[in-house]
Length: 303
Image (cartoon, rainbow, N blue to C red; front, side):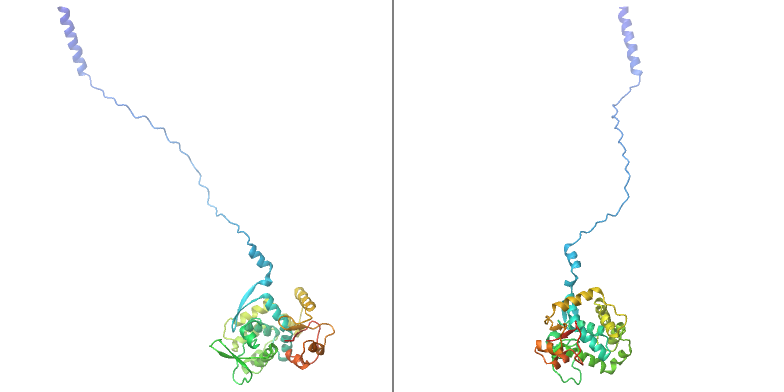
């Protein structure tokens, strides 16, 4: 009996001890996340990429063949011509231009440049219809033939000639016979730039860029060399032109498509006139010749 009482007493003591202890609550901690690996990068400096353009076969071909390049000449009409057409025009009329320079005192370079610009190198509408190579209008006192052509105004009156050489001669007479152009003849015959500006100042053309256009043709095609030939001052022909002249001389024993003939060894005005069924006086008139003197390589108008 005593043992039972002792056991009960011991159990009560144990229970009371356990009840006095604080309760500890534990929770399962979340697992630690692994630290992310830090990757350090170095920013590359910016460099501008360059692209080498591919060469164009068509552009290369154009560069290799300058003779086929064309341009639009705007005068009394818009005319597209190639470099070869302009060169042919120069070869056909250079002798007439130099002859007019000797006779009238107008630089050959100016005559040729004006002819190229005003006539579209002989291919313009006014030149082909009326042989008017300088855009000269009828003006008061003109008794010759005329054509109507749109220019600054509609259907203006322009002079008409039987052949281009008459137009070249009338151009010279037009400048020498009018007082407003008199200042031009006080200028040096070798100063084509002053002549180009003087023509514009005297009212020959209304285009403010007219002098620059003339100067451009003179510089591009070496037209001042013909002035030097007439003046006999420091004239040195370039090798390319010599080759071209010789080539044309050898291949032209008959008129070319522009109606000209290159004088060969042994030719006379009489023999040439017979060859082309012309009178000697007509041949001289077409080429503004004052006598029967000819030189080998000289180009004559025979159309």
